[in-house]
Length: 597
Image (cartoon, rainbow, N blue to C red; front, side, top):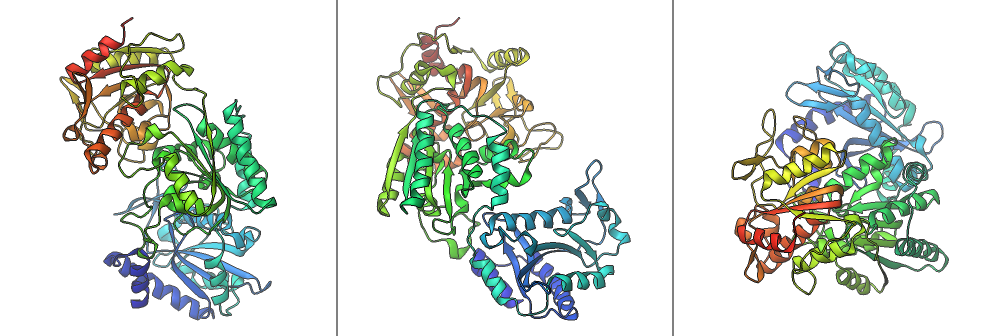
């Protein structure tokens, strides 16, 4: 146990919590005794094995050789100290445990762990039979957990209780021959991490064939450039970095998904990554709707810290303006805190790293996804960079005039604020207050359109309360809650990642972090006191902001972030936008610039 605690401290950079140490003592002693009794004392046990490209950890992975084939064999063991359990009504894979609440069925848990291993460990991609899984409830009798046995079992998920120790031993002996498992463990730990052919086939069916993406002009140019770069990386053993830039709605994500689907169809190893939880989880939900395994192809930028160099053919970095300086955070293991730039990690991870970005969407200090940043990182390791600029406009009614108007309004393009002369492709108006703004949007919603109301981060964001959400956004006698802070639904409010896509999201106010990357028919925007117009210029006021991340930067960084925040919010609408400012002087400017009706 001291050795395990020391390794935990080394790997994760923190001491073992008392509860986890007690859990180890109780469960690992039982498992050790079982292995010895089954004649398997020489197998190698990887404790708290971290699954590739995820923070999830399997309790134990037993490594050895198969008694019949002599090939490497791995058994994933989930150790549960449960003694009583019942199923959640209306579900077949969610359990209710006293003191722990809702828990995934242990068979479903271990089955997904096994599938993840075969999907992402290179040496296992053609050896799916090399992995099996068990859930071992060593404190329970069959009667205590009889509801769990109704769930179907297979080679990736077998269930054993303490009452069935003999059956557990027999199962292990059918998978492991008792010889030393050090070599098998080493091969697992040193294997390249890349998506398997089976997973790529699923992705091709789900992503490429589920939607027929039509790429136009520069979109097609960018797509073909990446495809040629992939072919060249094999023929000539070359590597280059591709950057695709474009404004809101220029089709960056359409290109990304088209590439993901087509490269998967061709058997290339490819993953998609973003820095946005909401965007990634929505993509997982949509693209992996009928094939849950496909969800694992959508990653976050900080999951490539220890990726094998050029282990992927292509890494598609969507929303790359969300790149951070480094991937390290408070949960990062001590040995992974190298200080290496996140952009360098992503470039290293693939033969063809692709970055899709909009430089005017950097909304936090520490985000540095610009063309110059990426070029500099590529140059530092001797790589060439190709840049494609998307000129098309597919959001905001395809109105180039509106996008330019927003950039000039916020001082992100030269010329200063200009009068809105109108565009038949797009509707822009102001509202006299939040109530009118909400009413305008609700009318559009009732007419069958999509609509969302978003605001600058100028009010506190409270945790959900029993029965609902706190009405944090308060303007005069108008009150509205922020979007749900939880990842899952609460009292009818969708989880954070799905505010923009779930119809129930209309009843909450979104912020830039839930709106960025999404679009809806009509956008309502509340400009708060964090950015106000004074005489002839904008004044950024961090003292009126509740965005602690944005406020950590310098005044100049906050100024840039808050302008970009409102640029993002003002360019979410496909058909129209209505805007209101809580500041009278700023509202006066908007009323002067935007003729009403």
